[in-house]
Each structure stands twice: as structure tokens, then as C-alpha cells.
Image (cartoon, rainbow, N blue to C red; front, side, top):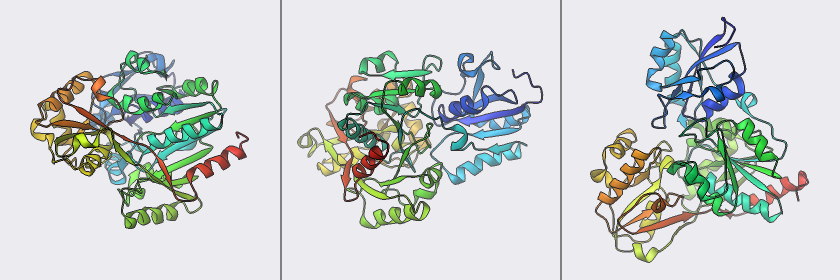
Length: 447
């Protein structure tokens, strides 16, 4: 407990990521504040655990409890909370204010910490890839950037937005160079979706909980750090070049979600993604909106071409589509690249898996009713992974089209053929992203 008995009593609202980072940066070593609890949402089975004493610091010898967000009102009243700190991402502006209303009505202030208080400073140049929503295409863009940087002879490390869904103490600092590292860390599907494609390119990937330590490790071995953002959060590390993606498949979302709008207002370069899949009208709308919000930043365009490993195998068949989980759940998309690929390959029928969904998967559909006739690749914990396997195997189809970036067939035993979908970033038009990044490299004497 903090030694200051007049310390401000705080609850941090989070989703196992930004919340822990904000605590580490602002509150961990500050005796004028006492963090009573974290609350958790979005990610299953985070609540009920504790932020461990080894990470919480000297003022918290017993660690800090993590409660379900549904308990916020009762906690504020019972614990006489002075401030509630909102610390997670990819939520609508309206939802943020609903959460604020709960805190305010319970007698607490409602606070959001900004980039100036929560960004770390690296000793090497940092290029960040962020977005106004999850599912804009950050990961493939970061991979493309890593190849560009390595073509200039630069050593690169990717630091990924946190996904500490397991044992927090053992996940404090994570460094991945191979799939065996992922196995040893017992990574979830959600983690593998982000890490595996980088590892296939030979990229070193860092992630974890204590990002001051992570940055310290990464900057000692590379010339440039790539921040691969999660959701629509702003970077944990101060970027020297800040690339922000907008999605013409969700026009208007440039200003509807937190902290995506703030991220866009900080952009050095704006990248309009997926122009190969969107209408000209929607591309123009997001371009106009982005320019209005951030008029100085140059705007470039990119595509996300989708490729099936075996299109002929899909033609005329009854298909189950498995999509990237976060994009389809809290990202708000009814379907993703898998559905597009199966449709283009002229599948005879795309089967809605709802009637085959076992309980844990059915709960996901109930929580996110916008989901279309696809199956989100959910596997935050073993029982959920087992539920995914049972749902896939129970679904009466000829084969599975899997658009999750990880090799799902290596994680669970599937009793029908699996055809993978791959999608990568491609430049469209001039100026291109490469020319702007190379200008940055020259300016910083990196090439």
C-alpha cells in the first residue's frame, strides 16, 4: 500500500494492455496515487486475476486485483474511488461516455491519459503503424515496412501492442524469433495471428507487459523499431514517423471511435487501405474526412490483395469461412478476407456456422450480433480453442477457408480440408508510402 494515507484512490478500466502500461508509466512508483483495482472487458477470463506484485512495484506487495468491468459502479462506491482512468481502445465515443457516466454517478472523476504522459522514448528511430479502427490492415503494412527497411540494410525489431492473456509475470518481457518460442509461451490464436507472419519473414518480435524494459532490450540490437499497433490505440513509444490507416470499408469511422480520432489527428502520414475492395465514393469519403481532420499529413493509398492457396478447390464447394477474430468481433466487421476470397472463388455456398456453434462460440455470436455467416477464430484460452475445434468439425461443409493469419491447422485437429487465405500490403498510386518512408530514412541518415 502507498505510504501516503491521503493518496488519490484510483481504478483503471482496461482490457489487459493499455491499462497495465498506463499503470507502469504513471502510477506504479507514485505514492500520491493508490490503484485499488483494474477492471477488465473485451478479453475473456482476465477478470479474477491479480496484477502481480513483481510488476506492480514496492507499494503493492500483494499485487492489484482485476475485476470484471460490470463491477465498476459497486467498486467505486464501496472503495470511495476518487478517479476512474479509462485505458482501453476501439470503443465508440458514445460508449466511452456511457462508461464515464457510471463513474461520475458513483462520485468519481473520469480520466483519460494522453500520449504525452504515457509514451516511452527510444534511443533509436521509431516508425509506428496505427489506425482509426482495428482491422484496417496494420499488420501486413508493418510486415511490408520491415521488408523495405531491411532492403536498406537496417536491423529491425517489431514491438507489438500487448496481448498478455496468460501468466502476466512470465509475460513481462517477451522476445519471439521462431514458432517454437510461441509454443513455449503458450500463445493464443490472437497472439499467433500477429506474431507468426512476422516470424516467417525473419523479424524479431517483442511484446509483453513492461514496455520500458521491452524497449530497452529492443533498442540495444536494432537500427529501427517498428511499432505494430493493436486495435486503434496510439503508440506506447514516441514515434519519429507516425503512419495512421483509415478504412474505406468503414467510411465515417475516422471520427466515431476512441482513441482512433486522436490517433488520426497526430498522423505524419495517412494511409487509405483496402482501395482494391472499396467503392470510389467510400475511398473519397474517408480521404476527405482524413484531410479535414489532419490537413498537413500527406495521404497515400494501399491495397490488400487477397489470395487463396488453392482457388480451384473452393469453386463449387460448400464452405465454412474462419476469419481473424478481433476484426470480426470488437472490430465491428460482419466478415473479412475469407468471405471475400470464398465468394471470388465461386464457392457454391458459404454455410452460417451458428447452428453448429458450441456454447462458448454461441456466446461470441450473442455478444457481437453484427457478425455475418463466418466463424471468428477465437482462442484466448484452451477451452475456447477446444470450442472452436468442435464448432468447425461439427459444421457440415466440404472444406474450411481460413483467413486467420496463423496456421490454425497446426493448433487444432480439423477433420476436413483447410484452404488458407493470405493478404499483404501493396502500394497504389503516387506518392507511394515507400517514397515517404525513404525520405524519412534519408533525413535521419539511415540510408
